[in-house]
Image 1 (tube, rainbow, N blue to C red):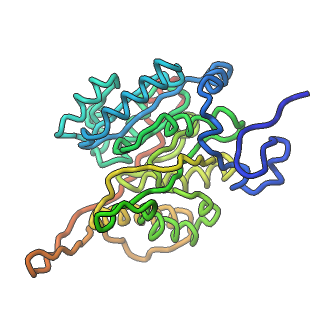
Image 2 (image 1 turned 45 degrees about the vertical axis):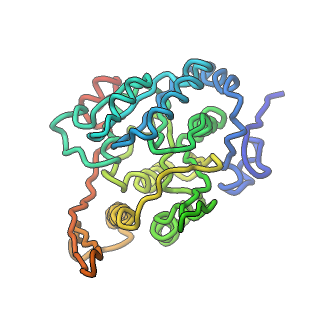
Amino acid sequence: MTDTSVEGNGECYDVSRLEECSWYDANTFHHEDFSDTGRLLDRKDRAGKTISVCLPSMNEAATIGAILEIARSELMEKTPLVDQLCVVDGGSEDGTRDIARDAGAEVFGQEEILPGQYEPMGKGDALWRSLLCLRGDIIIWIDSDIRNFHPRFVYGIIGPLLARPGIRYVKGFYQRPIKEEHRMLSTGGGRVTELVARPLLSLFFPELGALIQPLSGEYGGDRRLLEKIPFFSGYGVEIGMLMDIYTRFGMDVIGQVDLVERQHFNQPMSALGRMSFQIMQAVFIRLQEEGKIDLREEYGTEMTQVDYINGVYILEKKMLQVEERPPMVEVEEYRERFGRSG
């Protein structure tokens, strides 16, 4: 008798019954389901897959060394689940690149990858360029500012991609503690998600509202899927990936996994405002392309922020334009390196 059971959340554990389940029940997992990394390694070997893990970074000297050392020790040396550990750095000035090299990672400067093709513009552009450097069949991206890093942030994302046929992209979710009035509250982070991303998704892509952390920085997928979608620059990248994967491949290829808790430095409101501005641009671009809205005039890409210093209000303008990078499979250098047709 064929074993069709897989790890999952809720009561839908049998592949033959997945059509009876809601997406949330069928495609939501817990990292503990995949804590047996030896079993994951066996699945990886039987599938003939290789795995690359990449950390985008920008002045993360305080945290990136510990993350890389744990990942290398536990997931490359103790259990060889990860084949490549990589950092793509956006121009750090605090020694991040040296720390990453010392911790055993391959380190690439964002400006060194595809030089002359587009201006390096923030996180999304770095992730797009990283596809050229990463060799794995499965690609995992992990933010480099995690203060409570544990191997679950990696194997939790890998798990559904190996265990469940059909899932090709996985997002992590978690509780996000926040510091308030010198106290650490157990939850309350993820303000941009709840105030900007979730309302926009609920309005225009309601099925994606089932994702608990649509903007999480821990996610990964099948190279053959990721190379076929465009990437937004800056902080438009996470919501852009979700919109494009959902639109092009459907909801069933997406999974999510509970990573329990993520601790990091909570951004000030001004930084969250800039992040929100770029996320909204990415959504408006897609909505107009898909004919869901009609913008009669060009929208602005310069954001005005207000500061209050010594009794004086100060207006500061910042150019925060979001640009789109083409699917990597359309880039000649990538096609030559990975043997893709035009």
